[in-house]
Amino acid sequence: MRFFNLGQPGQPDDPNAAQRKQESLRSLAGGGLPLNAVERLREQATTIANAHRGFSSTLSINEQLLLRGIGVEVLGQVMGSSIYQIGFQYLPSWSGNSMELTALSEAYYAARHLALNRMQQEAALLGAHGVVGMQIVRRALENSVLEFLAFGTAIKEPIRTYHQPGNLPFVSDLSGHDYYTLHQAGFRPVGFAFGCCVFCQVATWRTQMASSPFGTGWMNQELTDFTQSLYQARERAMERMVHEALAVQATGVIGSDIEVHHDFIAGDQYRNPAVIHYFTALGTAIAPYPAPDITPQIDLQLMMTDTAQQLRGG
Image 1 (cartoon, rainbow, N blue to C red):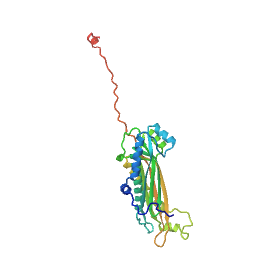
Image 2 (image 1 turned 90 degrees about the vertical axis):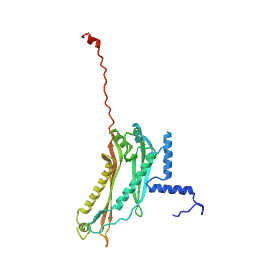
Image 3 (image 1 turned 120 degrees about the vertical axis):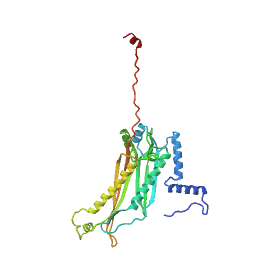
Image 4 (image 1 turned 180 degrees about the vertical axis):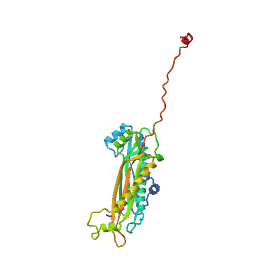
């Protein structure tokens, strides 16, 4: 497809627009939002404050009614995104070698952190206490580029009796119904826990023979090195998810979702065949509501004494 410039050739760009573009790029480089998004959200927050209730939401009608029943206000839809370049990653080539592909694992973490943090910033600009109904889209683009997109509905609770870590709105993938049920049980979402591990296992000689028609490929058998490496990827991902939950003082993770896929690399004259496991675990970290301050209620009783009767000896 060919694109054509419809502007007048040689016409200088608007200096104000160029300056705003540079400021937006600096904000994005620091993990922030572009200026247009900040201005739009501030205008939307003013509209909400003036009780002009136009908003968009990822929640169903029933979910919004449930939240309204417990005093939760739906403020609007928020989004965070990041398109991230993955750096160079060395791959092991010798038979039986295994290692985590840290460049890929760290890229997943960095893209996720930037996207969720930007969604928190959008929610904070609306005056929200949290985000529910979050949906996540992750996909690998061409040329080692990773896209991470998150969007959900910002909400405001009736009374805030506790503080989130960092004083930022919480992020959760709970549906409106799940949030209502959790609230009725005395629990609250405190954050979103994420664990990821990208692990490479080079086939051992036994696995290579099991995959060859000239070896033992004619019989059913487990490829134990590939199985073991998947367990290693799982353990690292789950440990990281638990670590993130503990960092926000959670007592558990609910709605945990596990995503696993594999890339098989064919061998050649320079390297042995291998498998790459992509293991991701994610869920909503929760904690009980803080116990309310209980003031002892003293039942005051006024005792009347008839002193005259005592003097009479009664």
